[in-house]
Image (cartoon, rainbow, N blue to C red):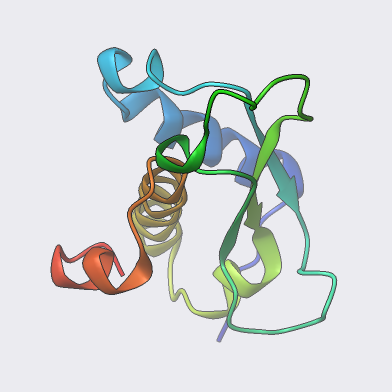
Amino acid sequence: MPVEMSRERFEELVGEALDEVPVELLSLMNNVVFLVEDAPPDGSDDLLGLYEGTALTERGWDYAGALPDRITIYRLPTLRVCDSEDDVVEEVAITVVHEIAHHFGIDDHRLHELGWG
């Protein structure tokens, strides 16, 4: 049974997950914004988060004036895979770290090897 949680509470959990990321790591992030949406635009049930942009490792001398990268955490798919609020807290933290890793150029295969899949 999916967990029920308001958007406001879910946004708080995303903020708390970001608060747990070391300041040294956050300070290396550049031109990125975090968003919370109810569901992915394609309606998929299994996408918990999405990184859209140009990873830091792929930015060259000509990277300028670009719109911010977007890290979106999806509320409804996350709630569907969780059985309790504690599960949501853990899943949100994993998803936030996973998407931040994409900003640093780490792909899904490597994230799964590291246990952040």
